[in-house]
Image 1 (cartoon, rainbow, N blue to C red):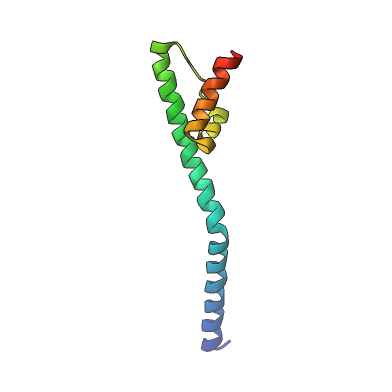
Image 2: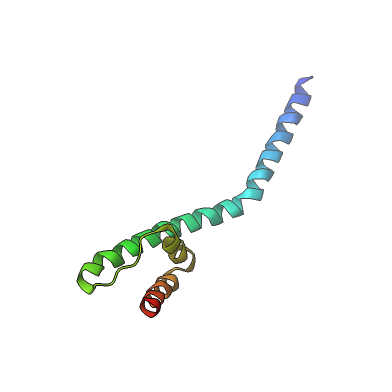
Length: 88
């Protein structure tokens, strides 16, 4: 294999790798956004439970509640509060 063939093969591999990165960048960005929002959801639940000592209102600090808040944001927190008030 000559030098020009090695360079061509290297360029082809680089284009394939760049194509794969471009293909998976959008789902990866979405997954990282949901993960970040889930962590923010845990923080919001922690703050609600921290204030629960004063108000007497507590929400469970678990992955399901954090995912609800992470995906829906502030409306998700309001939804969990309303569900707690209506059903418990």
